[in-house]
Image (cartoon, rainbow, N blue to C red; front, side, top):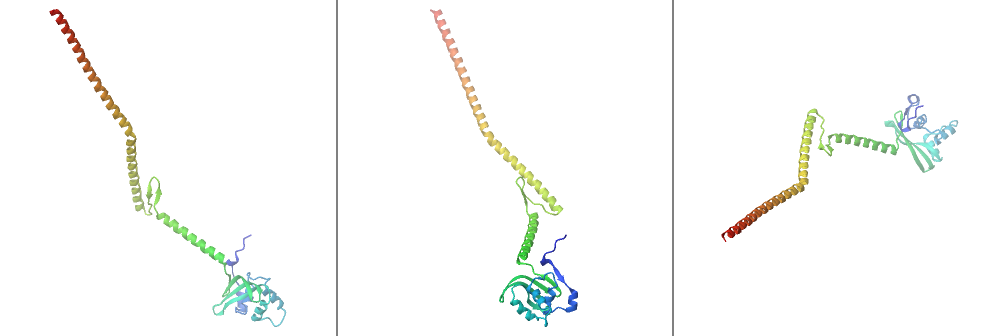
Length: 243
């Protein structure tokens, strides 16, 4: 079973009724009573049933006066423009002769009857339309904005093939430049990390050189000392022979 459409989405008309009776201010409520918008439990229907078998039939002004003395749901003409074939009918809850609470509003345009939408439905529809337009605008704007990636940075993606090829070439150049920059940074960091090792090696080399130089000096001094001792011994032997 299909769901019934909302009341404010309905359009009702009865051309055969218009052909028989016409449409005027004095019978527009009678025409409205044929539509599905009409409430059969309203005060209008009560007056109609009461005056159905009474003569004479109540005139429109008499109906308005009689409705003002009753309490409950009623339908009244809020505005009439017969020249434009436009009538506005209001459904309201009669509380006192001078007070009535509006419940719904209906339009009779030519022979078509519509229910006016509520303020809530209008505002919600406008908001949804605005959000949809904003979403579409953001999607279009996002396509033209640069793309960002931590490894590549900002890059653009145009629509045409030529621009796309140029964008790919620029992207490759950016990748190569970033790779070279990363390699240089890595070399700099590696040199900075290797500096303590190089300093230690240099200190070891200097220390080794000092040790080697000190060792050679000691050997030469020992050789001189030994040769002096030998010469002294030879001199002593020669003196003994002379004696």
